[in-house]
Image (cartoon, rainbow, N blue to C red; front, side, top):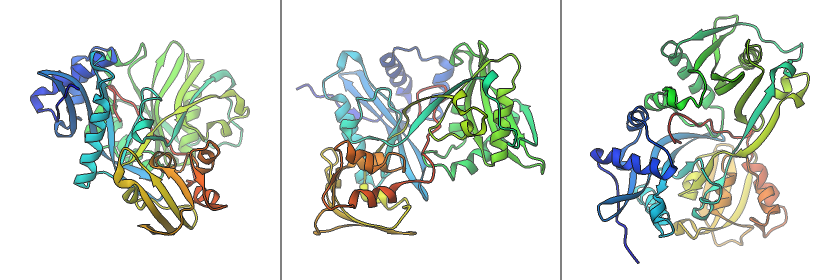
Length: 405
């Protein structure tokens, strides 16, 4: 079998690597987006596969902090995964994934990896599970009438990107602390998120930025959006108060010259409950964030649990063998322990199912109903499933000018 050496790229190889990635995606990498991506990509955290001198595959990691139920965990945001069509089915993706996970494990790096999957059939075999979903919300604004008792006081200001950005950053940081699935966003990631060259607008206008201030003068929410063919395309909305959330939606619904609105939000988005007719919002639910527990113990002890739990897990993990074994999870309040044990197993599952349940959205109960979790003690599934749940459905607001975590 032909060997394809793997290594990180050097800084001067970035453009060649990036153009290989976009060739795989069937795209041209515009110069502006290339410069924007180069400010975010860390060459030492890339992987590249070579066939002789030709660069034929690659992937990268963004080191971020992921909000999980009751806390935060360092996460390897996996992005820009590609193998040239001339080199498919040769084991390159498997080799790159194995290298990435092994390096994270052996270095004591991020215990969790996560990504947005371009195709749903690719990543399950590497131990990724669907940990969150998003809802594409669409509605005809003529029928999106708010209940009369919904309070939408305060004021909305339209700002340019430079003036809005400090306010966006502050609101985002506050909202991020309370929403499982959100990741921290430092300066370079804000630059990538707000990149707005004409070729990334998909026929829409430049971004518009609206910020809500309540009656007391506190800035509590923002939205940025585009207009296209009579539709308001909401790119991102964040609010730290109920009033700001409602006021921003009223603003969007009332925009002149538009008869539709679209938004990719959480599966438990509050908007339908603010309306006289909740059916006026049409929802299409798709997978959002895929999570891989690279080091199961470190990952599970980084989060908190909704109810006390004491369950013995038999964990299977063919791809990252260091996770396999029998462990007891004990959690009560801020105390969480994950320890090897010889006690009889009460649940049998793989690291994939633990990744799916990690953010508190996908439940162990539904995975058991699908035959993916085996209950070895009556009641163990229900006990563990309740403990893993979160107060709200997890959601990962992703996007930007180039494929990114």
